[in-house]
Each structure stands twice: as structure tokens, then as C-alpha cells.
Image 1 (spheres, rainbow, N blue to C red):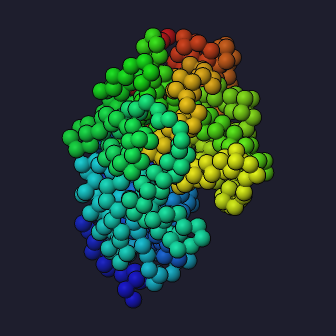
Image 2: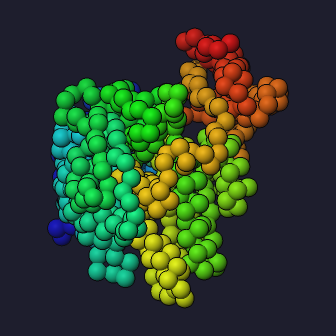
Image 3: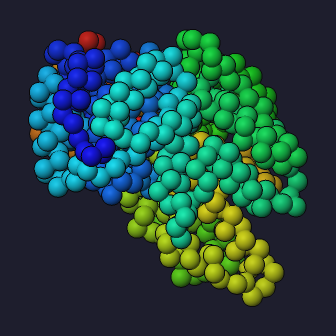
Length: 550
Ligand code: 16G
Ligand code: MG
């Protein structure tokens, strides 16, 4: 009875991980995320949930990642990864929330029993969990809380050490597909690098190497991992210069650097002094986002965000599919409301691809992208990937080209299916994707940028008494509640050329976000702050009205 659940054992372990009073935890878009010192009991319970999920899914290995991505260093967080490397099934998010909020040991046991009975879980099934963490100083203590939770339910525990979030997603899928037809790769860090490096070399073979790429690693886990990956690829294929790679000095993680800093502030990260014609990119703290940038002749900062990457990747893949003569394979792109209006127009009108818009959050994009044979999804913030359906994979694997040109395109598509992380957006894999495409096209960042010009855009945060009164529809592009507010926003928007604006409650911060774009920078800023002011006045704004640019 090694595997069955011993409730006394769970209670005894839970005593060491008491839930603080007066806190309500919620498993949100990115799992649990908050100040690290509030997370001990939560992580212990996430361990328990991971074990239950594994038992439910016939002993498949579940992944658990301890990270708070681009948040400040004092925060931390945790999320669960399902067997094929996808986000935890949505219906289980509620169980995570229930477990986290069980106040006493007895409450905790009650919730566990509820989950077991609702899901008809066979308690005697063995369970297996693989976990990793990023470089945050709070990581080790949280890992030990996690391990206590896993041990309390006698799970098989695999410690994957310090890793990027996408590496944990990768390894989870590897464990669950080992020895099957869909084997995803070797379940090791080394296996990950090899798979990516081999694929990259296949795509760039015979093409002159580009100039070096500066990588701002946000002083996070992406720094050591990128260094490792670069070794596997070799300097003759890709020249990488790391900056903000100090992941051991406390206080530096994400501080004035990283993809989120660059995207939000639309400026260079600290420590980056690139010149005209240099090429640079930023990862976020757990290396699942990437944005590119350069400076123009006149020193203007130019950002190539997730939308630009979607355009670049979409265009390249469509060309390859056409050249390979695989007309039966449809390519589609998935975006969120934050996608720049110009990018959507470019995709629809120039590349002629279908574009879907879904609510913010990787799980929404991922699921929508699965509907295409080849589904490209990117959030403007730089999180994204390309998914190949079973049908596409089979075709690409088996088809034979009639001409050398066709065969070459098929070979490249084949390599892309290995190069691109199929589980989740991955800064390392996405970097190689972009570099591979630019190397093939022999494009500078400026040439890539010329596909379309972004409409000026602005994001403003509004602090309100209760952000949960905001309800949206139409992939978050319209407010349903508070009643009447959307009509007022529409009226404002209609006064600006190419104006667009929407309002949604954040899933990761206690704020409401206002997005606006318009034909000129000035108009865009005005629109953004007018809408923000409207929200503040009409929906319980607190702590000062946002009023810059008005
Ligand atoms: C999380 C999401 C990201 C989304 C962001 C929005 C995942 C893994 N991550 O980081 O996709 O863009 O939240 O944050 O789903 P917001 O709701 O605070 O605007
Ligand atoms: Mg991240």
C-alpha cells in the first residue's frame, strides 16, 4: 500500500506549513504569484495537487515550476504543468485555489477527499512529479515545502534543479512520451540543448553567419542556460554576447532589464549600449519571453515585439509550405487584443493568413493555435511559439520533394518542428527561430522591421477599489460591466484617427489595464489617459488619477 494516501501523514506534514490567516489565494493566469514569504503553505499544497493530478492521469508525470517570471526578486510563484507540457487543465485551477485556502489541517484533508471523490481518483495509483525552480533566492526554501507535500503523499519525485520554465515544460513532455511514437526527446537538460542545436544547424547550413546578438538575460536563469545552449550550437553558427547575466548577485533579477522592462518602457535595458546596426534581444526572468530591438541611424529605439516575431515566423513558414508544395496544410496566427493593429492588418492583408483573437494568457492562445495545422501564437509581450498538428507533423515527416528546392523546404520545415518548443513559449527556442529565419533571409533587424510600422500604443494601469467588477467579452475587447462604460470609451475612441482602446482587469496584479493605440504618439497618449481617467472616475479609482499627457 506504498502509494495509497495516509491522511495522518498529510496532517502531520501540514503542521509545518500552516496557512497564514486572512489571506485569500487564487490560482490565476500564471499560477500562484506573490511575495515569496506568503507562499510556503501554498507550495506545500501545490505538491499535493500535483500528486493527485498524476494519480488521476494514470501515473503520468506532472511538472511543477517555482518562478515568478518578470516579477521583482522578492516575489515568487508556482504553476503546474500537465503531461504533454501544457498548462494545467483549467477545471483543476479551482482545486488549486481550494487547497491553498483550506485553513486548518482538517480542512485540507477535507478538500483532498473532495477532489478525490469528484474525480474518481484511484488513491492506490503511483504518482510522479518533476519540479524545477528559477534563480530567485527564495527558491530553495520553497522547494523544500514542495518536497514535503510530495513526500506526504509518497510520490516519486524528480528534482530537475534550476531551469528555465520552458525547460521544465519540455522535460515533462519527454518523461511522458519516452519510448512512444510521439517521443519528444531525451528527458535531460543536455537532451534539450542537443535537440535545439542540431535543428538550428540544419536550418542555417550554408548561410553566412549574422553579426553578434546581444542578449539581456534579465540577470535570471536564462543567462547560464543561454550560455550552455550557445556552446552546443557553436560560435561559427551563432555569436552570442550576454549582458545582464549576473544571476547570483541579490537584487539584480529583472531590475531595470528584461523583456517586460523593455516592452513596457519601450527603451533599452540597463547596461545595454548598442549602436546603429547592432542587434539585441531581452529575455524575461524565467526565459519564456523574448523581444528584439535595435537603434536607428538617429539613435531612435526600435522594438521588435511578439507581434513582429509572429509576422516573421508566419511569413517564413508560409513560404516554406508553399515552396514545399504542401498546400493542404493551413497556417494560422493567434493574437490577443494587445496585438498592434498594424500587425493584424499585415498578417491578414499581406500574408493572407487567418488571424484569431483570444483572451490574454498562454492557455487561451495555445488552445486556439491547436486548431490550425500550423498555429503561430504570440502575445505582444514576447511570449509565443508555433504548434504543428499531428497531421502537419506526419505530412512533413513523410513527404518527398519532387525537386531539390522542394526537398530543401521540407528539410527546413522538419528542422523547425524540432527547433520550436511545442509545449510553451520559450525564449531560447524563439531566439533560435528568429536567428534561423534572419540567417536564411540574410536580413538585418531593420529589414525585418520594415514589414509594417507599429501604431503608437500606450498601456496605463489604473488602481481601483475592486477590479473584479470589470467583466469583458469579445476576447477582452469590450466591457460588459460596469454598465455603460464601454459606450463612453467608444465615444472617446471615435474622436481619434485609427483609435482603438480596451480595458480589462489584470490577472496578475491588483489593477485594471487600459490599452490604447492611435495614428500619432500624441493622440495615442491622450486617448490612453482619457480612457484611464474615465475608468478612474466611473469605477472606483483610488490613490490618484493617472493624468500624464493630459
Ligand atoms: C501571465 C501570462 C501571460 C499574460 C500575462 C498578462 C501565462 C503563462 N502567462 O504572465 O501570458 O500575458 O499574465 O498579465 O499564461 P495581466 O493579466 O496582468 O495583464
Ligand atoms: Mg516569464
